[in-house]
Image (cartoon, rainbow, N blue to C red; front, side, top):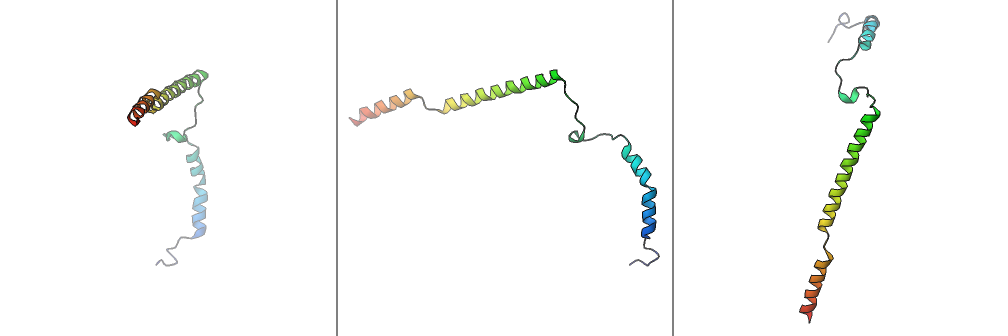
Length: 94
């Protein structure tokens, strides 16, 4: 437990904080070094860069749509397969 002489005086702590205010403000105004990418200010893209990015995105979406269509069609049963099965069942039923 501290004695009253060892305890910091709140008035002195406030005076030290006010004296350090200018130093803190100067430290905050300095240019920041490295920052994570999500905290950096965004650099606007040129129109050509935007068009290039959109064309790349469009091509990727088109490729994905073709893959989805091919995958969906490959799983669907073909009508001729059903007809063969039905014809064989009809023959066996007679």
